[in-house]
Image 1: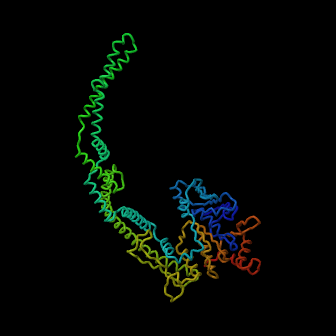
Image 2: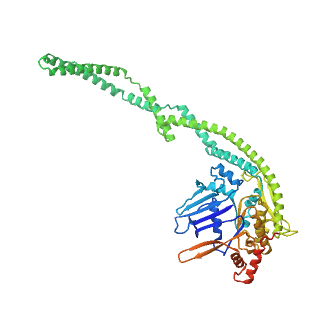
Length: 557
């Protein structure tokens, strides 16, 4: 049960604290006074999307807090335990949401930070809001299906949703494979390119080695001449470097006894003689290894030319050709594996659809069964609301060829007849605004769980009804709160008179801003407010009528 609601800087509410009792309460006030702001605040507190425009002008943030009293068996307690958010046994459940003016929001349950998704999940156990446009939405096929599915065991719907999700997952994988799959022409081109490269057989590092060998073979004559001239410079009889070095050593060696500094020079010349001898031997070996091989040079030139030709064709560097060949081979191999995987996924997808359809048929049967019960209970509720001859019928058609959907394979529509002898026709074509309002309320009555501990909030769902029907609506709403709590935003005095408590919303304006005020009414104030709702709060007739309505609020029908 909602016990206390505190609102700060929300829309045109500056500061507000309200306490609610068990039973049936109404919220009334002039049109445009801001009655639905309370509903918006509660919806936001329970996970509705936050918008910065909801923060009062000039305020840094809006802050909404609610206190709920839960009995020991309340279903919300198990959720709170699972989330490690349960209050102490005798403590109330506290929910808070704060909206900064610069965007975003923060939420807490029992002082612990939570997400908006967690608020929504918990809110499903605490509050059920029926909006003022519920009767208009009732003409939509999706809404009609939703009404029916509320009467179907959740496990059946869950199986359909799970198998639909599995089908979607497999379908996404298959679609990704299709995107990777080559067309026949693309695969043929790759196979041709690979065959061409396999025939050429490029090797890693080969291109660089061929370039080195080409330079060596192409310059063998120049190398031979350079080696001969180098050897001549080292070994010539009179002018060669070895002879001259030997001569310099011979000149200085006898004199080193008289000039010690010559010793080091003589040693250096000795080392030079050794190095020059080794260099001469190395030149002779290099000269002996030089070969003039025009045939090999021609082969190298041709292979290098083919490297360049193929590289230009594939728009890569010649040295990258071996890696490119391997990449094509791997891609074609992957395509073969993908083809096998695709066949496997296609079979799995077909099996997933069969599983989904099997559960969708179970859901169809469950809907058929639930529809018969809901049709009768709705007809009973319509009779209670003054439409004794009205009847509805759910038309449920199973489409085994339908696309896989979490909602199953049914097409659902409501047929409606308001008068005796009138055939059932689609709801959107035959029901007037008033009839839709009563039908919507009747379905709420029919589908309500009388043992539920949830707080029900009705936002002007009595729009479009009046007279005796309004009395009946008020009686139902009064009964709906007897096992727990229900709140209704209303303009109807007949409905308001049935309430156990009444809140009045008024708008106060000054030069700087407009604010909403909400006050709990005592009996005298309720008579005055009911008179206003009847047409004139200053009229003695209206006041007497209001007093009569209020005194008869406990009347059963």
